[in-house]
Length: 493
Image 1: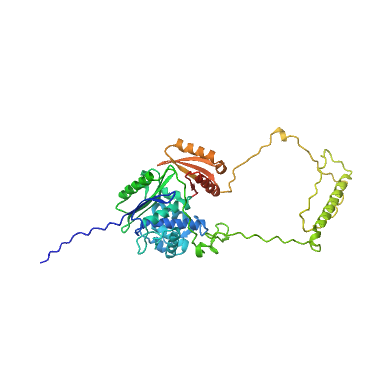
Image 2: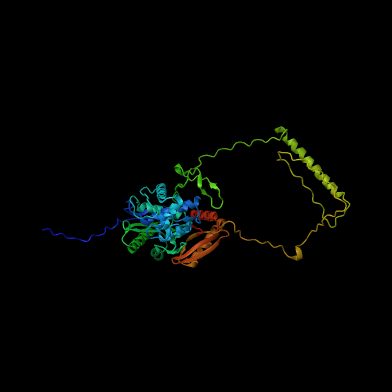
C-alpha cells in the first residue's frame, strides 16, 4: 500500500535583482543579477510616460488634448483610475494617474492616444528602449501587467530612470507628488511611504505583480549628489522599501561629493513620421497646438556642412544698364531736393502769419544710395489758400502743471513666465534662502528678474527660482550645471 502525502504548495519567490547608480555620471556602484531579464510590472509606466512627454514636446498632442477612453482601456484590471468607455479626459490627468497612482487604464489610454493602439505603442516603447541602450528590454503593453515576452532588467530600468530625470526635468516633479488631482478624483502615490521617510527621495516608480514581486526604481538627491537604486523581486512593500533605503545609503557613501555632470544622450525621436535614424520627414500628424501648422523636424541627423549661399543676383532697372544705376540714383536725389525746395518756398510766400510758430526744422533729404527701382516723381503741391490758418504749434518748456513725466512699466505677460528651476532641498529655510541669494549673485545674467522662492515640504525646504520662461529656465539650468550646481526645471502642470 502506498501512502501519498499531500503537502501545501509554496509560492515561488520572484528572482531578486538590484542595482545602484550615480545618476550624475551613470556609474554603477553596486549590482546583483542586474542583467537578468525579469518582469518589470508597473516600472513599465516609466517608458509610457517618457514617450508621452516626448510626444508632447514634438507636437503629436498636448497636455490639454482630450482623450476618448476605449473599451479596452476601461477594462484594464486594477490598479486603475476607474475610467469609463467613451469618457473623455485631458491627457494631463492620465499622466498624473499613471505616474502617481500607477493606474493601468490611464496608461493604456495614453498609449492608444499616441499610437492608435496599445500594440503599436508597445512597439514604439521597445524601439525607444533600444535607442536608449536598454538592450535586454522588450515591451508588450503600456501598463506592465504580466505578458509573455514583456521583460526588462534592473540595469535597463535604472538607465530609463536616469533618462527620465535628465531628458524631461520639467515633468520629473510628478513622481514626488504624494497626492495629485487626476481629474475625476484625487489619487495618492503608491510610493508615499518611502517618499515621506527617506531624506531626499523624490521618485520614481513602483511595480507589483505576482510574477514580478515588489519592484521599485527610486531616486534621491542630497547636497548635489543624486543616486538611483533599483530592486526587482522584493517580498513585500516594507522589505522592498527597507532594501532600497539600504542601497541608497550605500550609493551616497560610495559616490564622490563633487563630480562633473554627464547627462545621458537623449535618444532620437522615433514617433509618428520618423524614418530611419529618427529623421522626421513629414510629421503630418503633429500639428503645433493652437496654430494649425504642420511641423517638419530633424530629430537626430546632424548637419555635416553648411553650403555657402550663391551670390545675390543684381536687379536691373528696366531700360538702364547695370553699370549706370549710380548716375540714375544721383539724378533722383537732385529731383527730390528740387521738390522739397519748392514746398519750402511756397510755405514762406504765404501772407498768413503763424503766431508763436517755432522756426521750421531743417529738412533732411533721404539718401537713395541703396535704391534700385526709381519712384515716380511726385507732383508739385498747390499753394495754401489765403483764408486757411494753420494750427498753432505750442512748445511746452515744462511738463503740464509742473508734474514730472511718469514712466509706467510692467512685466510682460505674453512670454509664459510660468517656469522655474530647483537648485536643491535643504534642512532649513535659512539654508535654502542663503543658497538662493548666493546663486542669484553668481548667475545674474539668466536669473535677473526671477523670484526667489522657498517651498517647505515634508522632507525639507526646496530652493526655487520662479517666474522664468521655458527657454530662460533651461539656459539657467545649463549654466548652473556647468558650475557643478545641481539644477532641474520646474514646469507648469
